[in-house]
Length: 622
Ligand code: SF4
Ligand code: SF4
Image (cartoon, helix red, strand yellow):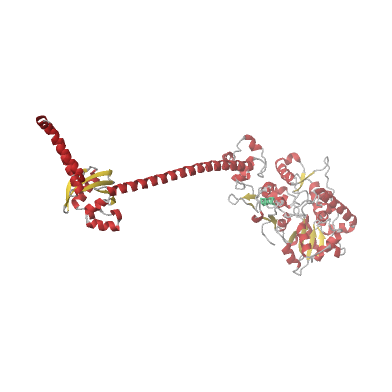
């Protein structure tokens, strides 16, 4: 038999609505923190099928038994179908149950029987236990989800589970006793948890496959089996009597007249998800006060089992079951039934249960508080009540599940909405900031562009002006490489510099050392190192006398220099003007004295000297 997990979630169909998480009664569905997809934890699952029913996109599927049934049917071995009496509630579209039996035979089953006889047997065992109270109250063990729930979440109650096999297993034993131990058995029913229950039994209790009603319908479609083409065929014996009431929760009690009277009876029947959880909880905490046995089913009996077709209505199904049970009990021959029951007296219907504790440790209070604080639900009231949209009854339960790694904070819609709002707010602020930065960037880009253009313009002007100057001008950097120079400078340096200028216009980047004699080069080094200017220093360069002024432009970074060829005519005139002016200034006192002595003669002397100066300033007048 296949041992794939009973249920699985197909992520490709999952819309992350978490309906499955909310409905799971035992927190067996974990949400992955990273992918946010839910996944079923098989060890924690009790096979109730609630998640399967709640998943509207059909992302959850259960383990199919169609292929293994087909293999069994084509194996050449004898295969018996044993049908749950819930067929009456499910297959009301088939006009007569005998047509239904024939349809199953058409699939290749060599024998078609019903589990109602197994119900009759098991119910008698319950009557024995309930009527012979020996100080211990029991919980019925017919619903496999209830059994799994107790084994996993109330393991100390396994000794209170009635030690009796389910009607499915009892029927398998009966069939093997009657038709031989080798016969293969396929159970057809409304439940999916029976698929896992069947895995637990071997020998004469073995169930070789479990088909849900939905799977049976699929097989009918697959093999194109329709009742209109078929004749009646009855079930193979043994026939059940009142066991056909089994799909209704208290049907098993009524089929052997177990006293349900509120005043005189000692059995409580509980059905449905909520009631199942509460009844086990109360049995655990207060059986000494309750003082009654419990007959518990997870679903509304088997009427609404997850293996039935979707859309069924509970009370319609219940009525159909009752009608069918009535019809069948009227056709059963009491003597035959009694004989059949007697022939099964020797069949061992006992069962044991295995504790499989899946309870998770409760985290320390500080941890719970920390999580409640994180999801901003630390208020006292939040601990007691909750919106339950996360799937947990209150915020405290939710915080515990987060701590146990079963849930994530995003499952709280209040928290995620608040987070989203904060995120949107942060996004908005960031966007506004970004917009402001963008504008500022554009402005500064514009400004930089303008400054660059202004600088270029100034540079061009300075460069043009430099070229117009008669004196040589050069600017060098900290490595004494030429940054800028004018034509007069190149002219003063001589022919070699002119040749370099042809290759590197303006000598930009040229090494000053290679172009100037060492004594002038050293003057540049000196100013660069000391920041002290050198003014009008006359130096010899080749055949020329040069007046050199060197001054720092930026401390230890840039140095500028003005070089004048003292033999150049314009410089000579300038020098004569300068010297004469100095003579006039220096001789002014003397001239005044002479003027005082010579009267008008002094004015003439000054006039004469000025005209000399003028004539040198402007040669055309001379
Ligand atoms: S079958 Fe039931 S117990 Fe298992 S995961 Fe689904 S809801 Fe939970
Ligand atoms: S019920 Fe669960 S598996 Fe189905 S779509 Fe919603 S989250 Fe996914």
